[in-house]
Length: 288
Image (cartoon, rainbow, N blue to C red; front, side, top):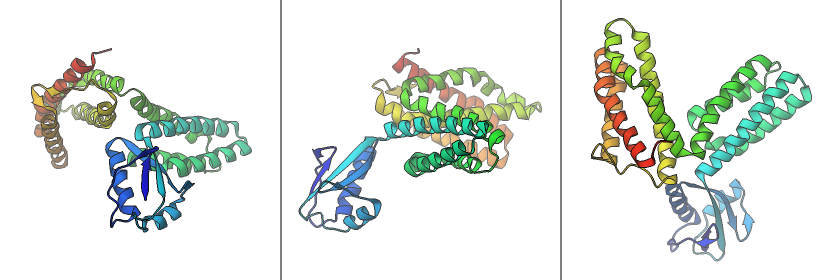
């Protein structure tokens, strides 16, 4: 069996292996390169999911050709997000018009979208998609749907911008850090003086910022030749390992409701580490 990936011969051992074994190996390779296999053809015919499952049991030594089509994961998700934003706006307008035919069409389009792109979303993103679909399915969706649509456009618009320009997205994260870094140093004092709400708001923003940075990082590293080679004199993997340890300690402090530890971590661990990280990003990319 000959295996092709986007028209190029894919080197893989086939002796004594099933087609499924080889496809699993090639899928791992594609994933490591930031790609997703979106189509599998056997002897020039595209296989349905059921046909693919059956073919996977066959011998990789058999005659024939399997052609794989792989697409950039970021490109696929960006395409999905573009479609999502168009459908959200159209569904909101249809609901506002109270045109039953338009609403029915929007529901059908949304169902097709979920079937085609449902697998590209994280658990958090999928919860928004499912909530919108449920609200769209209600008989009188107008007010709540419009409110939810506005939130969807803002939320997924940000995700799309991150995929389109990961360098700018990382610099945007750095600017957000600039806006909250002084507040991070004030967390211990605020916790000690009864301003718990202000302190917790800062910590929530910091955690969201870290989540955003982690989300951007894979595509930033793949798409940009200008990534930090070290952070404050520390190898990048070592820096990430230490930061991850701090975040685990922070999670434990929240669970134990240890305000003193939360404050200390905010001022003496999280702020200086993020300061070093974003300084390294700016030195590599150059601020815009």
